[in-house]
View 1 (spheres, rainbow, N blue to C red):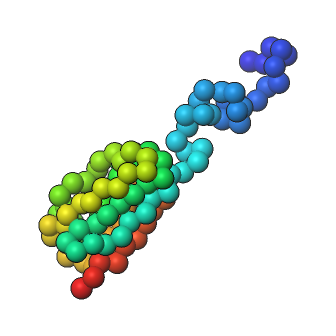
View 2: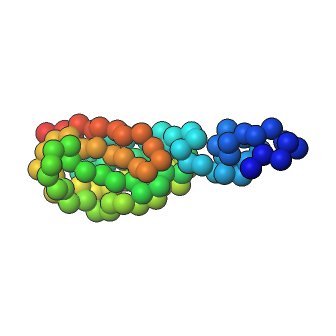
Length: 104
């Protein structure tokens, strides 16, 4: 309810709002991924929540680690144990989706 003391601004548009400053969707994290021999190297510019690696097709892959959090400006290498296709997607709850082509 607006009391007239401050302008009525939704919480997500008010820069003084705590929720606006901590909302992970306000500025999406940028993920970068590249194929390395036997693995995948993933980096995020900000904290990435629940990073997930999956084949692009409706198939399952086997990875050393999946569904992990990635701190800001850190790189994580994940070994690929078994993957039936040559293309993977890397995504996170608060980040962009990245497609990576695996070498043959």
